[in-house]
Length: 613
Image 1 (cartoon, rainbow, N blue to C red):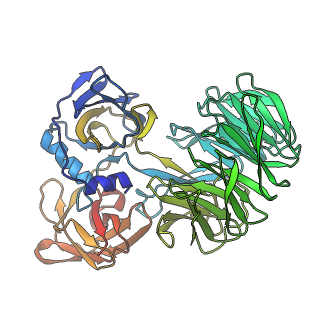
Image 2 (cartoon, rainbow, N blue to C red):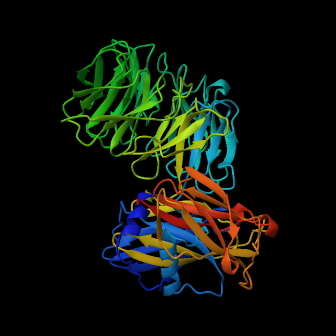
């Protein structure tokens, strides 16, 4: 469960407003607490097809869009004859937030997928929450040849993957996980970069840069710069692109409006890394054979400063809106941290031998090493005064050298957590800050994950005050769109009708339902817990006794631990099963009863909140 939901569980009593709303064309508008929420879904919701649900949130006074909010939402199917009353809306919000034995919504708009770029010509798509019936592998996306780099659009609808052996870039439609185009991109395409406005995809090739129009999915230009390999950076308004040309020891300045090189800056060292600082409006370039980081900026994009470091820098990275840049020296096994306001080094931090990548969360910089299973963490909170360093093991073995230049460590949707791909272990590890080791892992099914990416399906701010998510609707019917805003506290249940789709397989209705008998709202970690429940006929509510083949599956969200146990008949036609939850968190519990033709993926899970003793 992500942290915004955890905060909601711990805060005070929910304020439920009236459920009255006005319908404006296909939109529904609800106002309360000085906030107006306009709900819409487009295209028309059809079973089995993709729909984007959208909430436009503004202030009721002046209609000013409200940005940087944390709304959450669920879709829950209901009988058309059951109106969405205040009490039913209240019950659903409490049930979906409360980590106790409660039912789950039809669709949770607060989930995510894990993508692994493999050594083989394919991409693994792992569903950490719903993959409870054995494999968590949602699908495998085939490629013409192994991918080296990838980038996803801001709306999570398109994924681009460079394939050097095919001289192409694959375009993947994310909602369907289908390759819809293999775009010719030049000789051996490697690094990919999307402009901030998503207009052009920039592709580094052996002899320059191919610029692909993202609307037509065709090359808009091929810009010959100089001998590569090349790294790419953009200024904030997408008017200038900075291209490194390592073997030519130059930087090319590209006018994006003209799609032409307008300047070459000669360096004394082979440039291997570049990053742009929004704070200082400066591009920082490092050369592996020299001992200087060049700051390129100003009205003419000239060299405006030089930061002296030792030779061997191969990676430069800056956290979003950060005051400090990180230069990873692979020769000296250190990270030089420099202040972008003064352009001077303020810390030099030792890291593991063979370190080659840097990733960020809000609190830490993560440094990956190909020669060690340990990941180095550098605290960001006190930089300028000190740079505290810790580390944790991300696996059993060193990951080894990778053909991919894409990140092997990425931030997870949960605040203060990361996912680490370890190809040597064929595993992706889940780490939460403050822990001595990863909390759990996801198998990649005998495939080597060279890079990892997160597809966050939760509501995201796609425009100022507009929060959206794309969903595939499982069945026709009437749905409550359950919406919750934490601050100010606003709750409402909108309505959405989903049309039938004759071509879409119908959902198999289950003949039974599980009724939990435990009354506690939380149990202790590392202590034996016994779950008691009844199996009821879904239509009559009559208990089904003396079943001998009930299996319980419990797993810790987001799928990092699981256990199966047989249930035994107990008194009064009930059943019981015991297990020991290893860690605090939210656990999902499913059931399988072969005698009643009930499978794990047909049951609505129970949820259990586990706390520290």
